[in-house]
Image (cartoon, rainbow, N blue to C red):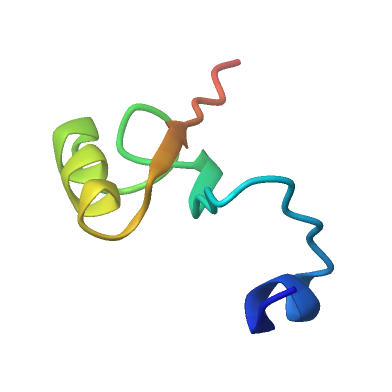
Length: 56
């Protein structure tokens, strides 16, 4: 078990370890910036991301 797995309590069953964000906002809901910017900046540092919209 590596340091990240110990810190976050993750039991990894393979050699693949992905970092991502499954709840992110941009200007399509009540966040800031374009969806293109959100995707671009996420791709610079994450393996996966989800853009979340909250529409009434």
